[in-house]
Length: 115
Image (tube, rainbow, N blue to C red; front, side):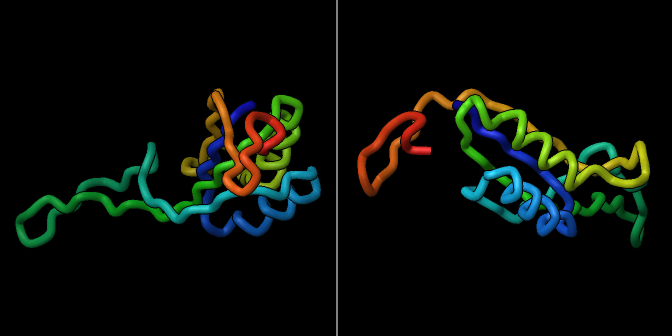
């Protein structure tokens, strides 16, 4: 079992969600997050003080999958969120983490059956 965390641009959520559904992945968790990576804006001076660069709004998608679904899930996210302009900074990332256990609260099922 793996936990996939994808950070994508806000405007890509609908395309990614549709691509995941087409790949057979229907259970996702979506959060609004903000941060910045390499796309830092140059420092600005406003009224004599340095201004901290603004955080960029993004979407965080969390998906718990069985091992067989890791590659199809990553492929679906890549297909739907890869920018048309190559080398575009700030396109996002996908993190793949080991998932030790999952427990479904309603039934008490554990492990891959709970996903």
